[in-house]
Length: 84
Image (cartoon, rainbow, N blue to C red; front, top):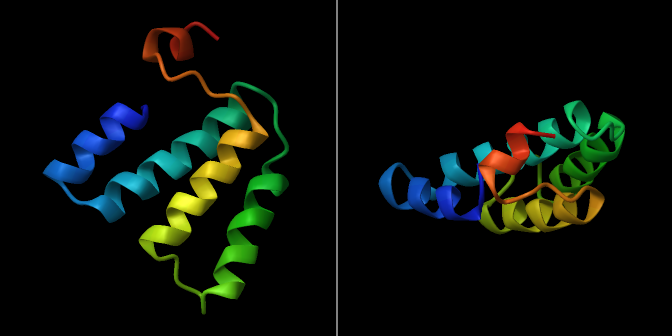
């Protein structure tokens, strides 16, 4: 999963699905492959949910994705992701 595949999925299936999938990928990769505490990700999502009335809009998801990218550096290249 990468920005490129997310953009493709957004065009083909829909932006909400694509952004949600990418957001979850970044979180799960950070936790499983890079050892980041899941609570860090959960806190960001919960804070955003509290500020947006319990529903993540597309802009909320984009914001969360940018924060997740700062927490852990997930490679864009899928072959590099597989080899970590």
